[in-house]
Amino acid sequence: MARIDELASIGAIEGTKGCARLALTDADKAGRDLVVTWMRDLGLGIAIDRIGNVVATMPGFGSVAPVMTGSHIDTVGTGGRYDGNLGVLAGLEVIETVMRSGIELTRPLAVAFFTDEEGARFAPDMLGSLVYVGGMPLEEALDITDADGLVLGDELARIGYAGAAPCPGVVPHAFVELHIEQGPVLEAEGFAIGAVTGVQGISWTEVTVVGQSNHAGTTPMELRHDPGYVAARIATFVRELADDLGPPQVGTVGSLSLHPNLVNVVAARAVVAVDLRNTDDAALIHAEQRLAQFLDEVAGAEGVTISTRSLARFEPVTFDDRVVRIIHELAAAAGLTVRRMPSGAGHDAQMFARVCPTAMIFVPSEKGISHNPAEHTDVDDLEAGANLLLHTLLQLTGDELSWPSLTPR
Ligand code: HGY
Ligand code: MN
Ligand code: MN
Image (cartoon, rainbow, N blue to C red; front, side, top):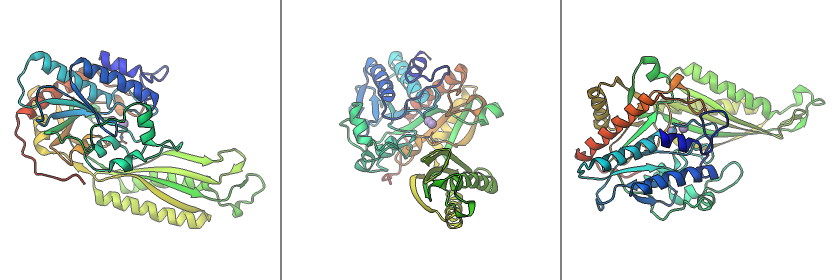
């Protein structure tokens, strides 16, 4: 808890419990430096790779593949103190506890934090873990730019985390991530633990609308080609599409910008980001097709041009049932109420599911609130999650989980 509080003080959002540490900003650097110091203080072997992922491994095991845990310490601009941070700091606590206990292990534990999990500054999300497992070429990732045109590789070098360890990274024996649920289910149903069975598919599309900038007062309505109006139509359509398709489909327009964004000017341009998610890929593809059809229609009707760019597209992921079962059974054996459930949010674990036996542990989020400075999880729930992580990782060190050889896509 002391480490959670100290890390949350970096980029703290005035008057809240939350913090803002967008990827590769100075605040992210300060958070990274603090966590790396804690890793070094434990005497862990630290590898920083070329996309800035940091992996800290128990020493003395040579090249034996580790059982790895971890998450992210970058946040969205209005972040909470537990999203990602809990998984990294609980992992550190687990390793410290194991080392202090003198338990003899057959393979090392490792804890990692991955670059730019949020994708809020540099899309896509889960970028660092995606590169770590070979899902995106390093050079392509280093070239990604943010909304101000700053290049990811330059920002990584600027904060001193352009490491030397190669990407793709060492394939772990198994990977387990502890994370807050970020949704209302566990709290509403009275469960202490979620044994996470997988992650829903994610589709992010940047929609650029170009119309005719004009005077707000003199331009007759029938002569307008108004990107501001079209952007509002898109946001409304996305909501109505999700309502029409019904759960588990969700749709969000969380980012909408107009240029020149002035009260008395019909906009020249609008940029809208659309986030669509579904646990079923065919249904997600259908939702994407409905969006594309709507964009065609509204462009024709308003006489604007619309172009789109995919910012992220990840298929739904199913976690390894053997690992999910270990989590479920250990939670029950510890007397914790536990249910299996999919994840609505994206996580680094969904990338590791491509290369090794992987699953996640959820703990409840108060009122299901997250990506919000008010994010909160009770300390008893945090502790239960960390203890379950400890026992899950220990079991996995002894468990020979033969893994069909998979080449990362
Ligand atoms: O977008 C997500 O689901 C994650 O928080 N990056
Ligand atoms: Mn997260
Ligand atoms: Mn997040």
